[in-house]
Length: 154
Image (tube, rainbow, N blue to C red):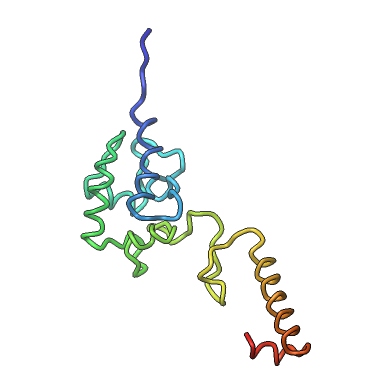
């Protein structure tokens, strides 16, 4: 029996996880941070970030070491692929595609208001409402039922 494996089939799945680890991203970036589609493949690196990584020595196949060395060079060179003022490594660390500025970790968190720094989670609004109601109830029982008096006790 003879088995043949294609190198490109092995390389692509490794690179997003390697970038996630190197950058501290909240999830693995989509293949489209480098490629034209999520299928990836040889000859499809067309995004500015992917080209910047290739320019700094990232190779194809399964060479994860080339990803690490290219990423280090990218940081040293303070590359900003989309010229938005945010270096690529900072964009990745926040789950943002360095070529487009689009989030790659699911739904984008709010960018304004008191919850803008809290990651979104199912039921978060309900939890906040229940917490506020419990605090209000505690404040009313201590102060004879007035919300204003109870609020000063918090």
